[in-house]
Length: 365
Image 1 (cartoon, helix red, strand yellow):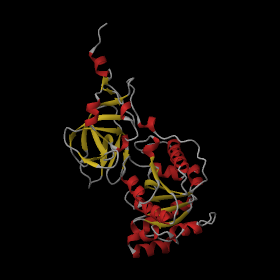
Image 2 (cartoon, rainbow, N blue to C red; image 1 turned 30 degrees about the vertical axis):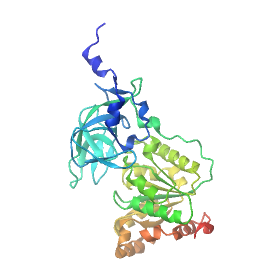
Image 3 (cartoon, rainbow, N blue to C red; image 1 turned 135 degrees about the horizontal axis):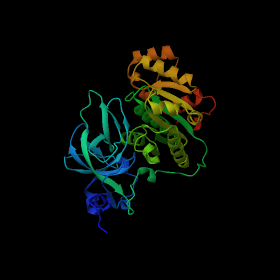
């Protein structure tokens, strides 16, 4: 029987290890064992979020570097072959994008390795880097490789419940990650074993490395649970991500977990997660990052209406004594600057403000 041209195009193509060795593997792909990648899948295929693809850089745009598996940002050149993941993106300060319906040309919309079609962009952001998918990456059986197949799935944690602190904010770049990192530093200086987690966002390692450098003994994010991005994820998926990451950190024996939720309170996934009963029941305290007093007032009211244990404000507004005083006056909450967050006294203050817990006075020195 003759094999027609279409069948030849869709048949898996064996990939040589030498070719893969020359490609630049992005942060989002780091959990996948390279030895599992055996084939290139071309032709009429519909990609899904989390699928790995081999792509060629066609025209450089906003992202001119790609974050490699261990954090180094490698420069990109036209003609480079990269291994990235398909994924949606929600970033008001950069790109809105979605997974395309086929393997036609698309864009690199995040340095951590996210491929999708740009729908809109911030006026201050350049055009996205254009890439040409060469095919999905497959296993020896010609099945697409998806990072969901490599996510952590820890057993039920047997350690005691740690203190869980959530950092949320008004928007992208409100100071959430900086707040979380300095909070980790303060708790670590108090002698606590701290774990860091980023529950939502777009796959990239910068926030993870900052939390790790601040003293967290282990840091995980949604990519460790098998998601290249959480934009357009369901509530059940978001709750699953939280459960997996929290169980993993509890199994490491941490005494406190600082977790960041990306973007602002009005973003779909952020709002869904914060209103989720499992999330609310797992969090001991919330610190809200805002850029100004008005944002702090609005956000504090939003969080209080939903019964979340809001204890303090922080973020970009803490850089201004005037803005801090305004926010404290209108919300009745303290504004914690970076020095306060990174002080070992923060551990005692947080425990004392949350009356259900016992302050770890023996650990603060």
